Length: 291
Image (cartoon, rainbow, N blue to C red; front, side, top):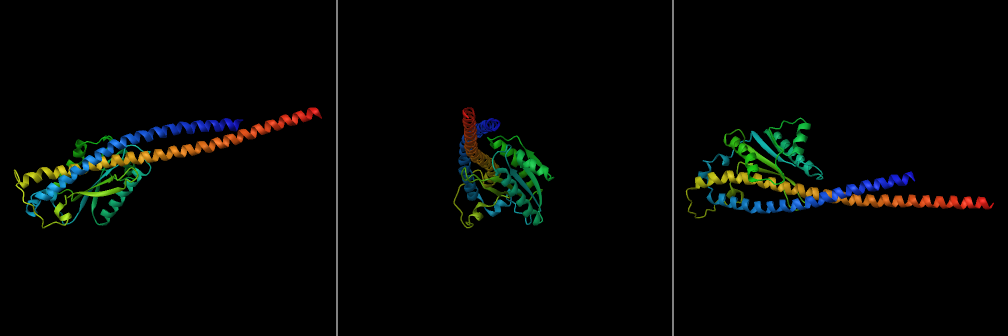
């Protein structure tokens, strides 16, 4: 019965694993709901910021703001990659790293020098492993990102851009469409693109009374807009991470159930074979005594 005892041990081991994966699925589902609420709260705010900037923007005003500077050529760019600190999320981090690598290749092929800023242990570990220089890294941002976290990431990049040390800043993050759809995206956050030009409304000007002035309003809104973009990227990546982990743990739980069923069938067949053998031995022994 050694094989039967071995199968029972394997069944018990897989059952314990299934309990862990099911618990992790439930935890990820709970965290995803809260992260999804943060994403839904951040998106309308970003939309309103863009509308206000569009309302007060004009070319003569833009010339006085470094964050609106449109360089003739992009000689140096910064890439902010947002990954997670933990694994067990399927291909979530691998897809983000692949997107960042593709962006680096595209920029460097165009003659642009790049510097890498990373959030999360997974991205940091990969680029250290391949020997890529990482200018800054953060592994202390939790699954509840705050506006202060976004400011700490974006303020130094805005200072470098305003001083002319950078010509562009990109952020690579997971866009949260749903629990099953979190594609990696690359978004340029600096220079801030004039919203009216993006929307194809260059000639549209509304009649506003601006107080204290358009310069003062833009001076406050532009850094706020960049910080909010980075915050939204953090929130969406966190929601995407929880969604990916929930899906991965759900699949792991289902696979464990299938494995348990297969092991139980094998155990039952082995047990039936043993019983059949024992009956045959008893019958054979009885026949021998009668003969």
